[in-house]
Image (cartoon, rainbow, N blue to C red; front, side):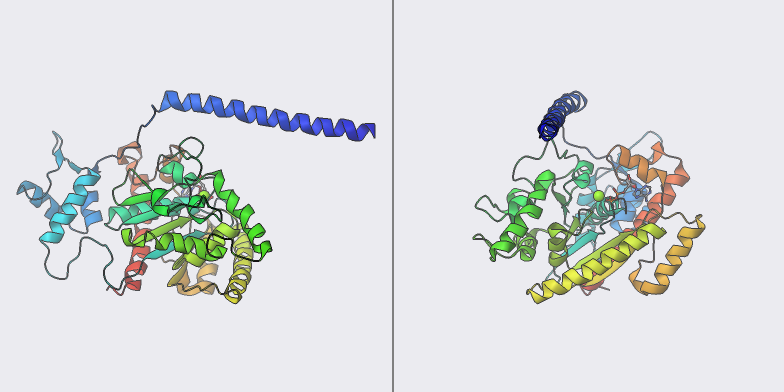
Length: 404
Ligand SMILES: Nc1ncnc2c1ncn2[C@@H]1O[C@H](COP(=O)(O)OP(=O)(O)O)[C@@H](O)[C@H]1O
Ligand SMILES: [Mg+2]
């Protein structure tokens, strides 16, 4: 008896202590952040060198340099040593300029037209650390830099994708400001268009995440147990799809960074997706865990189909992430995956690079950091791999649209 009482007391003391410490930490972090970043400071974006701009626009550097020499299109900043650079905004102006002066059949603006449907790409795997967020962020930014209108959706309560875009989940995202606000079951549900934010990249908008997203994992089983979809709308797996449909006209591609679990959020993303990208680090434990993920996914999809969920995927691909070609076992694992999954494994792996992990330490991507901050060959190898992956995915998207 006595023991039970004192045990309960200890528990309540512990949880009070934890809550107190959480508050204290939160206050200190806010203070620290205020000192580091003045309020309302928007994340900026560096200028892009002429060669990069040429790559993103799909023209040669020589052609772009000539335009600048002839005074055509937006004029770049030129350093004393003659290096030319453009802001991301100027790159967009140049894209419009090129499109207006293009020969018939050549496209610089990649927006979808007519029969081309919105592509919704869910980046999934329930293994944390498989490279979901890194892949999603670079894909979304690359698509934006190459002239697509992109919406990035952070569906992970840990919200790393939001942090990368300068939105701190604990400080900058209030109640009802995540996707949860647009898919919740009660009367507080609101239009997704009210939740979407601009990012530091032209063409790229964000639906931020934070812990609030967990509510959906709690609400959904309750609603399902009640045996209806709730008074305010559709059954769970159609809600994300419906929210995206409400903003579809504004975008060409949606990239969803999923949480590291196969819960209701991930299932909703997969049901709303037109394409699935499964990230996998080529190591035994990771591949075994992916195998479990696939089994669960198969079962879940079967159940959903029975419940009237319709899944029509244009494509599904495995992306090898954090790949070290010097590592024998990894190389064998990749060969093993290719022999099994054939052309479902993207040809280009995302190589492991300190340029990527160092950039991540300051919540940045390769597209944001300066090449001069790294050993050139390191940066170039990482960028080459990243672009190859993203171009391969862009080709899949364009092919889905029926483009050559
Ligand atoms: N290609 C890469 N090279 C080096 N580090 C990487 C690479 N991809 C991801 N990382 C690092 O690995 C960690 C996990 O990646 P992340 O994308 O956050 O995985 P997930 O979202 O699946 O949990 C992060 O610290 C990230 O910076
Ligand atoms: Mg993540």
